[in-house]
Image (cartoon, rainbow, N blue to C red; front, side, top):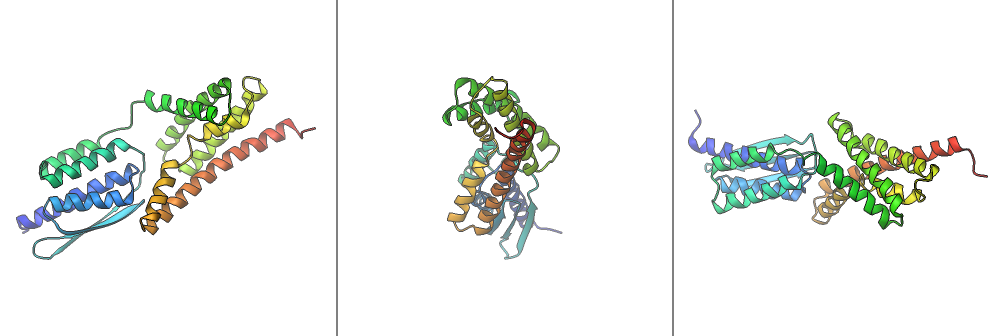
Length: 262
């Protein structure tokens, strides 16, 4: 029969592991997941909390007051950038350390954070259109080019969301998105709707570029988290390769259809 102390230590490890899982699944840095886990576990009375996180999973351990160890391993199988969840978990960790949240409060708050969905549907679509349109202008496109690029971004956002719901790899999603962006840009130039194909393509694929992933990879490498940094850098490279393959396929197909340039 377990004692109350054993139950408290197990709960501390379980809740701290859940907090770290939410951070990693929401696109947070590995150091942040480790710090959140340690803070929540310590606030709940666990001793010597330790965590080792990578983008695809983490291990966590702590001791009870008798020196008996507890450990847990969590596999991270989904990734979706959600800064709101990361911010709320950070706030939860601070409240736990300051004593404003007890064990039951932490559990309720974690359940509420985990239940948060994505942003309402119009917001990502409109955001994608604005991002791609203004990037097109930044890279030298005219207003008609930007409007085409905004339309491409709107559709790419829906395509990648649908493919993500089908559990398709980001690599293949980027191939589809890159090919679609290049094909529409080439078609718009052929129809004389717009004139700067390069700006339209570059502006549109900026929506697919793994910018946050690259920043997190650099940050992890600088901090000495080599395993996590190299893993994130490899993931970013594969994502970028998918974009390049998709755009290249569309350009090559257009050249085959139009024939050699005189």
